[in-house]
Image (cartoon, rainbow, N blue to C red; front, side, top):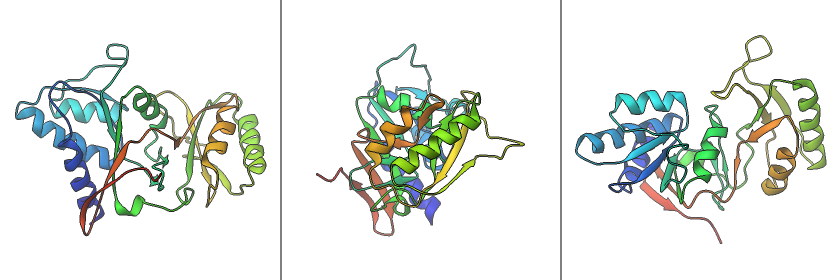
Length: 231
């Protein structure tokens, strides 16, 4: 059912796309449903241009016949539509399970608005059950890991820090970086943690998305619900 819910949320978001829009197109299983829904509208005559957040998304969008560009060509976008791994009541997100968090955040920040699409299992009261992805430079990895662990200690957090893919075959992002997955369990102060992580020289970006999502379409047994940030 989860995949059906993802598809329903993606199809609802595709309805918000208007002719002439410049779109950021996300990465991941839910975003792939959106690409297919958008492709169907494009083949029916919708004129839009998209900026993909990963090579996988680019390949799928091209196969769907969606016109694409880069942020060099279109530095300001109208809308980004993307999935999330966790969504809290303030619409703070954990993203990066698919390994594209840096490009996803760059594209979302270049957009006037961001819509999140998800199934209801992604809604949480407090972030942290899903491992927090942290994109890091391969150079100085050992020192970066120690600095990240010290950052967690200062924030009162405990948990295992795992190199995605392992040391023998580490996962490499489209940007040539590694990802550390932090199994924290609960993140009480996402804003403080976000600020502390980006201050570490070896950290390229983290999967906490704060203040970027305007609303979310969340699908479940009762259909698709619109979720807006709690005030």
